[in-house]
Amino acid sequence: MALISRMDRQPGDESPLAAVISARDSETMAMVRQAVQEKRMRLAYQPVVVGTDPSRIAFYEGLMRVIEPSGRVIPARDFIGAIETEELGRQIDCIALDIGLTTLTRFPQVRLAVNMSARSVGYPRWMKILRKGLSADKTIGARLILEITESSAMMVPELVIAFMDDLQAQGVSFTLDDFGAGQTAFRYFRDFFFDIIKIDGQFIRNIHRDPDNQALTRALMSIGQHFDMLTVAESVETLEDAQWLQAAGIDCMQGYLFGAPTVRPPWVQDRKAKNG
Image (cartoon, rainbow, N blue to C red; front, top):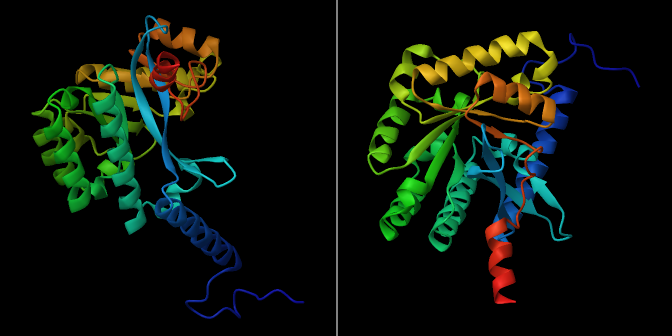
C-alpha cells in the first residue's frame, strides 16, 4: 500500500503519528478515570534529605500513583501529560491534596510536599479541600509544602503570586519544581518568593564529571541562595554526584540514592509494627 504523501493530505487531516498519540492519550485517560472511580490512587513518598547530613530527612514528596487491579504501580510520569490540561487533572490534584492532608493529620511528625498545577488554584473543589485541611489542624500549614512546576507557575504568574502570598501567611511553603527546565520569566521570579527550588534532574545526573552541568547547577544554586530559597537537587542517583553537590553547598538532595518513592512509608510501617 502506498503511503499518503503530504500533498495528498487535506488541511486538518491528522498525521499517522498524531493519531497514534491521540489514541494512546485517550487510553491513558480512560485508565486513570477508572482508577479514580475505583479509588485506586495512592501517594508514593520519597525522602528529601539534608545536604550536609543525608541521614536526616528534611521532608517527603508525595508522588501520585495509579494502582492497577493486578497490583502494578503506575507512576505519574506515565499519565500526567495526557490529563494535566483536562478536568481529570484537577481531580487528580484534589485526590493528591486530600491524601496529603490526611497523612499530615494522622502523622504529626511528617512534613510533606504535594504536587499541584497552577490550574487548580481556581478550582473550587481543590480550594475547599485545602481550606478544610488547614482549618482542621493548626499545625498542618507549617508542615505542608505545595509544589508547582516551573512551566505551570509561568502560565498564570499573577494568580500564583497572589495565591502564594495568602497561603504563606498561614505557614504553607512553596516549591518551584524542575527549576531550569522551562523558560522562567525572571521579571516575575523576583515576585514569586518561593521557599524552595528544585534543580531539574537533567543538570544533576552525572554532574561529578560534567563541567557544563556543574556550571549551570552552580548558577541555579546562586539564584536560589540570592533569593533566600532552599536549594534541592533532584535525581541524585550516585554517591559521586552526591559528594559533588555536598561540596558545592547544596541544601537538600532527592533521588534513588536516598530512597525510591514508596506507597508504604516508614511512619505507616512503624504504626503496623507497634500494633503488632
